[in-house]
Image 1 (tube, rainbow, N blue to C red):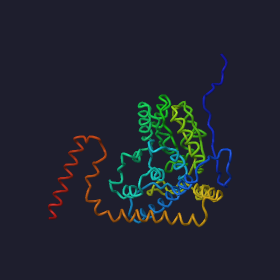
Image 2: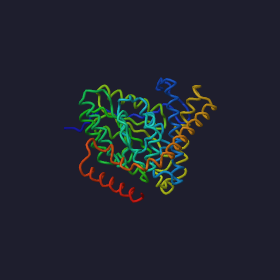
Image 3: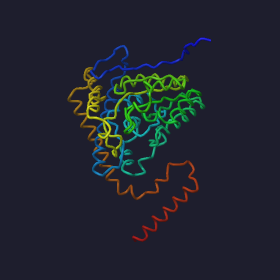
Image 4: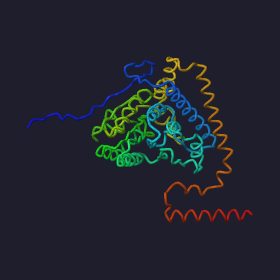
Length: 367
């Protein structure tokens, strides 16, 4: 028998709508309401300014280690913008701009990275899972949620974020395979920021794209310019609509860049060059989208300055509120045991009771 080429159901496309020079492909440009465009711009600026403020707070010893998001605002906000409130967001650990856009307060991040367990609490009315530090484990959580959605006959979706480094983990392949087999309503969003801490993308895989890994799972995949909010929005909307219609999962690879450190415990000058960073700074997603709004007449230079001042004030007030509450917050360490289990296991209950006794003894000794 002769060799023959196997026809596969999917190929990989690359999507870009608004390039770094401000050129717009009007055939692909989404028709988005002005208020949505402005809300997304504000969310991008808020994410960047909060990132910068938290970095200063950490260097001053007022926050612990955290992962900055600068440079990746478009890749996460463009993705979550088409979601409904009833849809699930499953973050990794660098998506606080997306989480704030979905309703999580700024204060919770300041609490979390300040070492207060109150910052880890997720209100049940918000369909946002807590952040996940172990690489790629959250993909399985998202697939489990989306399987439950399908089992119940609902039309919601679960969107999960992860980095390029996660695509080297077994959980990534397991999640994609399960989602493909059972056609779960899962949207996989890979923020390919070129570096898994100090390991470059080229040492992760020989594959030309990360999006093509979807083909092995029998699901559609697409690579988008992750610094182009419009392109990320369109790709995400298509994936969400496909999932909602019962047509299964999609893998989106958003090609972006981490302009800052991996975490505040990292020194990127040891593994990447200033020239590389400068090249990506020229592709800054906020500057690009800001130019788009200026061209459309939706903002002015004066309004841009005003918005920056408004965002700075909002962040400053949040920091002040948290620091004023700090003394009261530390008086309730038992909260660390809450919100972990629907029914607390006996061994955790024992630990809680032991700590409660020790706290009471300590307080009595002071009296």
